[in-house]
Image (cartoon, rainbow, N blue to C red):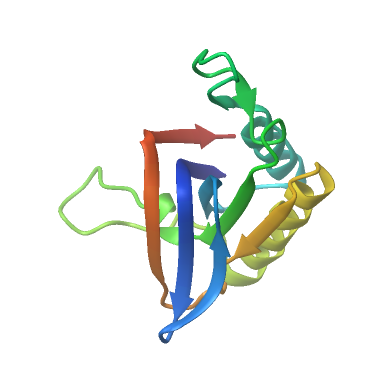
Amino acid sequence: MRLLLQKVTSASVSVSDSVVGEIGQGYLLFLGVMEGDSESQADKLAEKAVNLRLFDGDNGKINDRSLLDISGEALVVSQFTLAGDLKKGNRPDYTAAADSASAKKLYEYFIEKLKSLGVKKVEAGEFGAYMQVSLTNDGPVTLWLEK
């Protein structure tokens, strides 16, 4: 399972020119589910994401507070292209991606896990849809997490 985390001041995702998810300060999380991934991996990634200390403290100390500490929000977007392999040629190979049914199940599980961990607002894209994502990256901070 792969997670691309971007710290944002705001983010939104649209399908067919209609906003389906929108957040303020927090994380835009692109989730790629790989063949053989499990709920245990989703648990670990969700726990890591909400506890990462990427927000400044009241005293100006950098990387002092977590998403939970600041009552931040999360926008989760399914992105099978994170499973892409570019070792050969110029065309990505997506055979490592989980099948659609398995990926959707873990995607939805991950979203529910974030909520259960106390994230105040969790929004999501539309699984399997062609989406447009808008964001204002804060920092910029972008991290790659993998379990």
